[in-house]
Length: 275
Image (cartoon, rainbow, N blue to C red; front, side):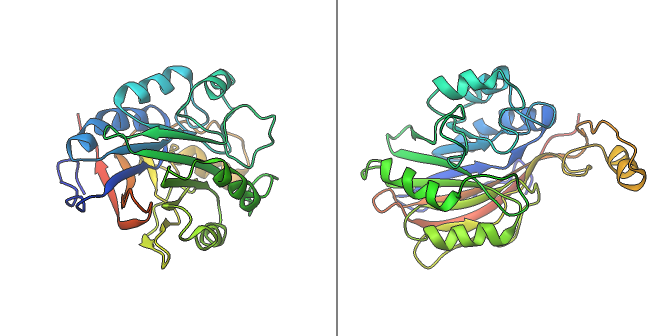
């Protein structure tokens, strides 16, 4: 889908939530900040961004946080690179629209969830979780999400999960674990969009990975040759963020605000205009 293509019409009575996949470096930040207003123009009610790779591929700066908010992003999730830029810890502790993975230790800076509101006043709860398969040692995401869901007021029907995980099995297990209890379980972290977007039998939208926002002439957003050299020789290199063929990957979900259940889901990929 090119950036000029229109999204399908939103289902009547639904709230459309868009989740933008891992933003990598300046190219990813640039396209996100330019495309969020276009999403608003096409009737998107809430926009969530995973920004853990925004700062040259690892972490998020305060300036970038402010840029995303100014562009119109409603909520920001992160992941295993959450604290790569120490300056973001104060933002995590004081701002109401950015979260840490809920299965991090309780003393780790940040909130386990946030509640944001659409311009129409509909509340959307956002939760981030870190997977355990092929990832750093971490607390149980299943126990953590149940504790967080108990803390969310029952009138907040739309409940959104960003599952930052490596293994598709980890993500599928969480999807079925939360089916009917949340609006969506969408995966991030692998930077490759999967073609398994669906609505589970209980009404929860699911996708293993929503993809990457950044350079697609790259290896996971990084310049190709240094990655190849290190892989073949074990000679360490700096993996700079790539800049060519920039695209924004995201997934949209139409949710019934009365039940909090998903009614439609779809992928989108918009390409930046070549200068």
